[in-house]
Length: 178
Image 1 (tube, helix red, strand yellow):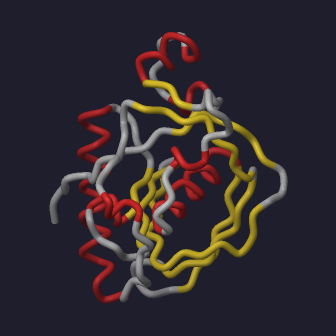
Image 2: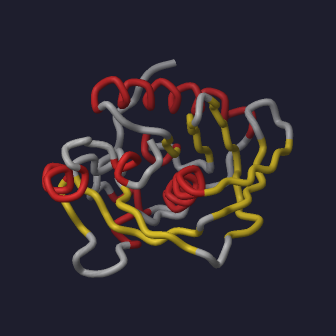
C-alpha cells in the first residue's frame, strides 16, 4: 500500500458524512491510513490518528497509534461519552499549521469491528478519548474548527509554540499527554 495525499481544509469532501465500511474493502484503506500516518509523522514530527475521509475515502474507518498500540476501527460508534469535559488545543492533519481550542469528553466508549471482522469495544480517557472524538467527528464531516470554544480559539502553530508551549512544539506536551 502507499501513503496518500491528505485532504486539506477547504476540500468539500471533508464536510461529507462517511458511509458504513464494507469489511472486505477496509483492509486496503487501513493499510493506506497506516502508511499515510507514518509519512505524516516522518515529515511533520507528530500525529496519532487518521480517518479515511482525510485520504479521500468516504468510509467509516479510522486508524490510530497510541501508547505503542495500533487500532484499526471499522464502523466505530459511540456507546457512551462522559458528561465531564476538558479543554485542550487540538490539531489536525488537514490543517497542520492551525490549532483550535476545543472541549471534549474526558471518557468515551466505542464499539467497532477490527480489521479481522471481530467486534470490539474500547474505553478511553484523556488524550486517547480526545483523539477518538476528533477522528469520529471526521466521519461525520465535522472539523475541529467547528468545535472551537469561543472566538479566541484559533491559533497558528507558530504562535501557539510562542505563547503556550514554551517551544516544545507538540499539543500533547502542552496538555500533559506526551
